Amino acid sequence: MKKLLIATGGGDCPGLNAVIRGIYKRAKKEKDWEVYGSKEAFNGVYSDPPEIIKLTKNKTAGIHVKGGTILKTTNKADPLHFPITDENGNVKFVDRTNILADRIKELGFDAVINIGGDGSQKISQALYKHGINVVGVPKTIDNDLSATDMTFGFQTAVQIASDSFDKLVTTAESHNRIMIMEVMGRDAGWIAIHTAIAGGADICLIPEIPFDIHKLVKKIQSRYEKGRGFVNIVIAEGAKPKEGTIVSRKGEEGSHHVRLGGVAFQLSQQLKDAGIKEEIRETVLGHVQRGGTPTAFDRVLASLFGVKSFEMVLKGDFGKMASFKNNSFISVPLEDATKEYNYVKKDSFIVKGAKGLGITFGD
Image (cartoon, rainbow, N blue to C red; front, side):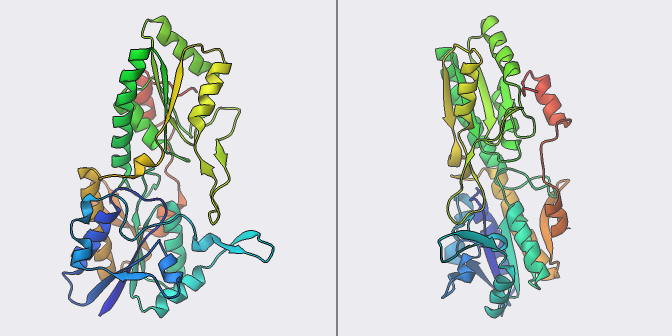
């Protein structure tokens, strides 16, 4: 029997379970493959004894409708930046990809399907260079992988954010308030801009377009002068003013990333300092966007990614990532998948279209 290992890494995302189920169901059509899952990304491989589970019909039945991942996940213990604590208690990050690759070989796995975003696919690329037969699957609610038209989880996150925004619109109108809703988006503003268009926001602030607070004040004042009496703002967690920085704090132990969140409260204070007298309320959605039942679109996309990734394994199409391009499922080299970040381009039609709808970006 040949052995396949699945890992889910990085932040959790609606649709992860649908990919796992898609891989398992397609693999079961082949008589000589067994499918296993590593707990908490590749931590299960590192563990002694290994925390690896054999996937079965009972374990995968019906999981495509559930959020999260049955394999659990983590954004710590990245093998490219593995945390090591020295005798003085100081943490430094080292590359342990070679150790991970050797361990995968020792455990007898013939192939690996690594489900994750930009960071996870860089790990996939490193493993491939160390001789591991690896296939990547693009996962992120931020939609920030450029080698695919869409990542699963993104549409569900936008739907959750849009539903929340709709509720804030009615309470903003009732109280003549300014509502600021903070959504995820460390470096890319895809969730924010889609939510702003879907919800009819007045202002949308994204990482790619640093904003001028005075232009936001002008927009807000024009709304009140025209008798509308309320304003709704969507802001990505990584947005920043033209002469400022992102709102962040030190990440948790074991992670080399800073922790974002709180920009809505900073913006609120900046608007007050700039002369806005109207009442302002802030809402931070946070991990609500990652949880819950995936939309039908994401279930379909994730399930087909699962099937496609296993068929890539069968063909020996390693060192590549499954991709959804022009309504077709293809494979692209992992190097192409990670070499260019998928930013919202300032001159793109989605930005121009949003401005055409009257949405202000503060630029």
